Amino acid sequence: MAAIARLVNALALFATCVVLLFVLYWQLVRGDAPGTLALMQRVALLGIGLGFLLNVRFGSSEAHFGIVIFSAAIGLLAAARQMIGYAAASGPALGAEMFGYHFCTWEVAGFFAAILLGAALLFIEGQFVEGVRDRRPSGAAQAVGWLFVLVALAHVVVALLQCGFEACVDGAPGYELLRR
Amino acid sequence: MMVVPFLLLVVAALVATIGLRRPAIWVWIVAMAAFLYTLSLRAGDFLQFAP
Image 1 (cartoon, chains in turn cyan, green):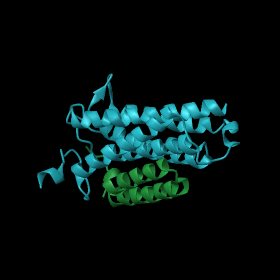
Image 2 (cartoon, chains in turn blue, red):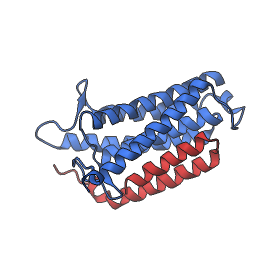
Image 3 (cartoon, chains in turn cyan, purple):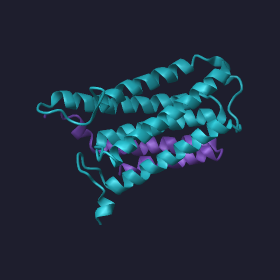
């Protein structure tokens, strides 16, 4: 069961990287700059990825799953707030859609799934027997770990370009540093 | 301000990748504190639902 838990952690980390890369693509190629709530959801995604990265790198620990569940709860709040805002607003549809649903709706489902996954993995008690230690993960797991670091770095650069060190303005294309 | 949690989370990921577990967790805690502080600055905005 511990091997299954390790595999699921690595797959979850990879899925987080894919989502982070997709939102980066959507922003840079499709020109859809995120607002404050979307940035909050990205911070939550990075937190979820960090929790799974710790599990992959050091072995499973309740603290790592705590990071995953805490981050996903914050992301769920932000995505739900955005979804309610869209529902309350009248007029034409707001924000980008995928398969007929707004991104924030997908995010609500994704963060909820992350909470469920984190909670479900906690039931595999066998993974905690080995304890946490500095282990050498497999080549694929290491590659996914470094991919996560690079994607996170890319998000920092983009957030820095969009907002600088000041508060982000909702709906603005941003890129304050590029304008200066 | 929103960029600070992003920066700290990257530092946490890097620290974890080079093999330092506890510092990575502490940096994540600081990142969440910075994130919640940033959020508190605009808490009123998020409670407004008027279109």
